Image 1 (cartoon, rainbow, N blue to C red):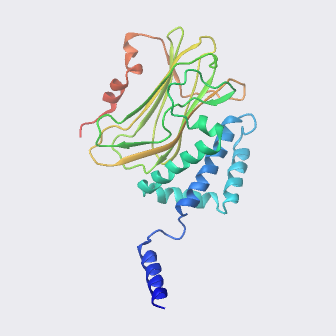
Image 2: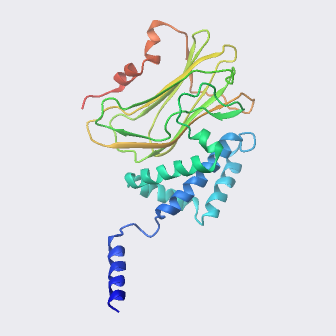
Image 3: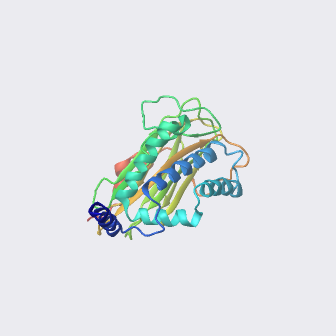
Length: 282
């Protein structure tokens, strides 16, 4: 009887220490869900010809939510909650990465962090991102810069379409918005580039298309959080950079710009110069 009392007291103590709202999925359920969400996104990215419209993409995502007994709205609500409990979310995300690596060879390619790979994967739609899939920015750090620089190989073609994509969590109120920049240098030294400010939480996408004549020499860019007068953190995850071979269904990237190579455009390939242009003193 005394042991039973101790058990009941222990259960009440555990319940009293738990402050998670009822709608928040447990760590294990969230890991299982995110693993399947990432697999679904990988299927969509790798099969653009099949999932080339929002309706088909939505059906696949809804199938994942149905499997786990939740709705899109409940999933979004959980992301918001975990976005405000970032340490717990990062613990979950580390488990997701390990699960994906262990379960699926394709997921290993999508989550690869091995920069020693010299040849990209062939195919019409391939994720060429080789770095970590998540990054934390701190407004008090003077070098808050996530950069990438990819040397194209024989699997890159003229008119290739690129899409840098990631999910933004816990975006603080900022005096200067985070900026995303991506550029392509061609064999004739012409540069095309595109950039966008991060203004809200959720998915951020930056498209860019290469020239129809000249081959690619470099694909490079950055995500930067300028130093701010107030303290705060920005967390992004699910980073991908998908290369797609051209077909006539791709919309024209109206926001990208083109410029010839000249000394005046040196800043477009200088990361620190880019940071200084938008930095404000703390």
